[in-house]
Image (tube, rainbow, N blue to C red; front, side, top):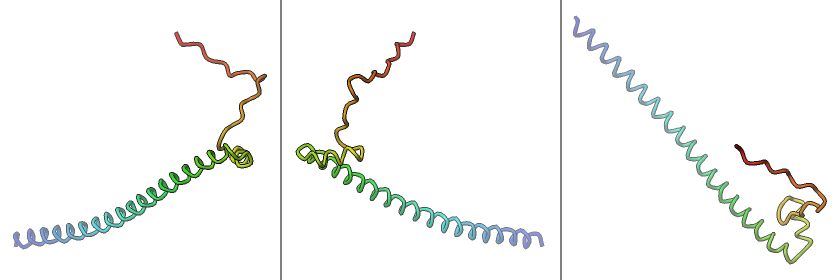
Length: 98
């Protein structure tokens, strides 16, 4: 009788272990799939960012010979910025610490 109870407990432990293993595998598979999708999205974003930076650099170069383009770039915060007026006070510098 005792070995029959022990056998039943071991069978239930084995079944529980199998069910949990399948559950954790499925969870891992879908989470890693989502991570792979995020990774590919991040790579695509970095490539687009690189292309945008190259385009802006080319536009800044083009703006050096075409003042209209330079004004447009400056209005968007890109390109050569106008220096502050000569009469504006400079930002104070902090004295070195003791």
